[in-house]
Length: 157
Image 1: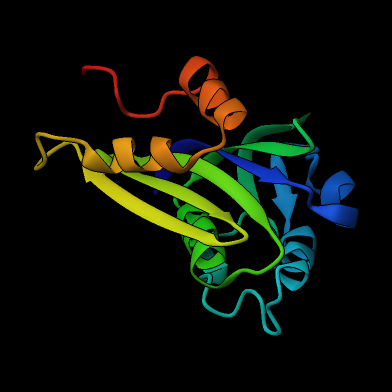
Image 2: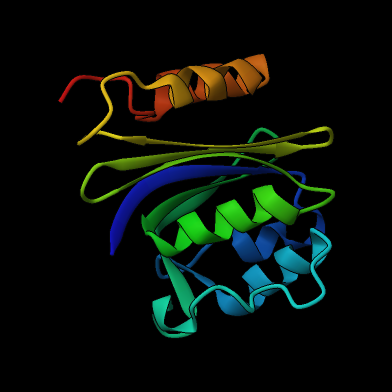
């Protein structure tokens, strides 16, 4: 299923060059390496391999930003990827927002001492408390980036 969003991964160590994509995808091997750096032994077991396109996750691109990489996601497989990092990742700093076609928006933040995942449904919720909670845990420069450069789900339809 299509999904549109942005993930900011800070300090991804040696995997950064592999995350800077070519041909609008990030390879399975680069994702596996990132998961291993985040402390996973069997990193991508639960990510459905059928979500991949030619052994990679599709993107709308990626670029260096801050001290890491910004990935512009194109499929909901990125939602599973980010949530798994929030739930169980170590030694990683990730912030992001992804909206699935159909209106669900997920918010992610993980760094030392913090794990945040929130969800908002445009179809059933009137108040996007997940957005306010997510913005509150972001570092100031990251919050400013997302508010000025990325659609975070606070605009009206």
